[in-house]
Length: 321
Image (cartoon, rainbow, N blue to C red; front, side, top):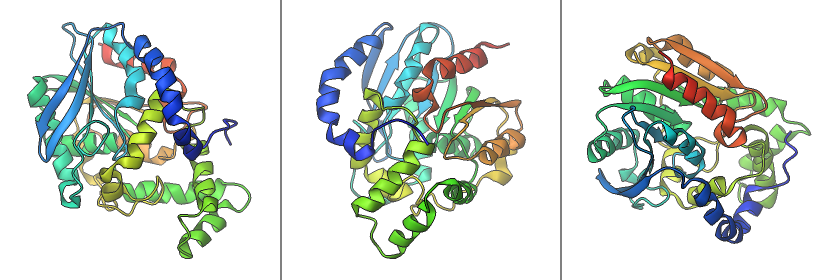
């Protein structure tokens, strides 16, 4: 178990004060590279984008997780903007993007189409594509659909090729939790008591172990706040990280990974909620040269737990011959 003394609820309760006091400092830390921002039209509405850095090297386009979070937690990757443009965007229903309440708007296919719309709007003919968590699912689906023209390299973090495989991994993780955690949480779910403080505390124990093992940064707090407001999370995913009952629950591309021919870096944490076998499936199934890096002591949000190590992995990969 992590020794961090925070809960998602406590973090969000104090979030307004903490964000007001520290986001300015954080923004200053990320102000070393030229930056621009704006909105782009995509199927269903507008998304919000941010671009850091400049130069002639191939831009890095990032796809955040959730589905339903925001780009903020990925901001440590802005350190790579000293060599190339780094682009973040809030997907529809997330962060500063439009958030239609119509559930029919949110689908895997619309999100795939959104990637093409963002690339067209920002003139991203060539990209290095990075996806984390749901963003990795989105990147895999994008490439399996044959839309990878101009995608020179691929980075998948906290990644999967199959939601059923992810869910099987969750069951194994449940069995490792102490003090009868699994029996307690399943009993509460069966009784329909998922809105209780007891259930919230059990969920938080899972998050502290397998999602984020350090106190949250301002960027993570901003993402958590976005997640609580996102209709995309409810529609596509479900009520929490390990109860995936939304539209993505049956997604499975394990048989189609040979369509991915790009050189690929796959990263995960030692304690990632997306279990190691999910990452090994990607490594072994992708047709392009792929390697897997496991970050010790980390869980799902590796870029927030050990940002310097994570960025070093990425920098080495994108610059290697």
